[in-house]
Length: 396
Image (tube, rainbow, N blue to C red):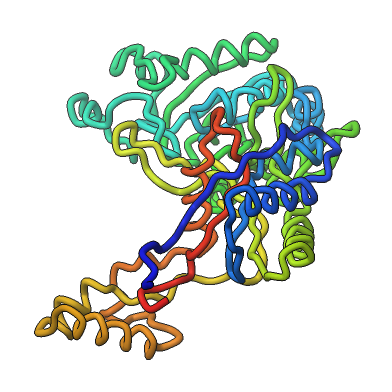
């Protein structure tokens, strides 16, 4: 009988993970239990994906606000820091900001407007036109911002992030002023020492600041790149990718991800006899059409993956073939023609009209987004995702 389904995605339940747990073994056991309980036949090129959160938890990769403060103090001995372009997030940035404030004497906080880098809005973008504000040129003080835009609560959290961040900084005994600008160099009118808190644009921001004559320039990816007083760390992305754990600690992005995925792959091969691809995933990359928020607040979607997940898709657009090359065919004849075209396709379709619109993103970004939507961020209890048929096409 002809197969009637394509890609199948399953969220797999796992125990609550604690520091010191052998996560590779737990993932292997959870997948094998799932295969047996659901009577699933496993195959080569199936995919097992593990959320970064449980890997960091198993590693005990945590840091406290005092650890952050110590590293900030060492890197910014002058005491007055320009903290620029943070995202608006209690989960992602508030605890980091507490640590930064505890390590500084004064913070000039420069917020981008009307939204942060990932789409959290301070206010509706249409107000820029109404108020005659040019976001590319105008630098606003807090008083000017309030006069123009008032007190706007975030539609999802109900928080006025301007007041929230200012209060948080001052509660740490640090002086605070807030300005609004979208050009990095604007901060140099207040201080020459800058901590860049943007995620995906951080390299460009640092380069622009140094070219404009900044003194000390670091990013969140430069804070806690090594242990401080025995803390966790991430040698690649520092504080980027961290999440709130408690009111005084953050869970950092996991380390040693490549060794982890390779061990899981080896364990699964021992148990199943199949070569299963394995990846660690964080935030997916997709936009909420209502809140206008991009999900991707991690420095990358996947910090570790096995070799079979490298590259981008190499696919033909079925509707293009049906509407153009095979427009005169239908039924079984159309099916046979398209199947033959797929079987004969080039190994690299880049630039081909027949592949136009097939989403040429990295496989790990596509799969990671699928996994993030599957596992969610709440109480589903499925931090492992098992995918079958992802690499199949119409002929399989």
